[in-house]
Image (cartoon, rainbow, N blue to C red; front, side):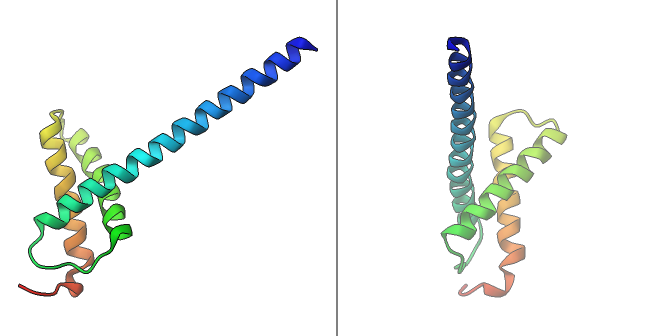
Length: 104
């Protein structure tokens, strides 16, 4: 009986740890996406009519795609990887919002 309770407690702690790890990865992806998306918007000329959610989404996708591309190209320095991530996110902003460009 005590062994069963102990196993149940350990299993509960393991599940809680996995869930916390997943939550932290999600929070990290959102923060990284916000930063990469913001830098991508800064890299593009003119005013872009995109909100915070799109900025995060473009940043997350740009970060993942740029990171994967950097891995394929064997770019292991963080500076080159970051530039590639920003570039991919900026390309996403340019391609998907070309018709929403306003101003010089």
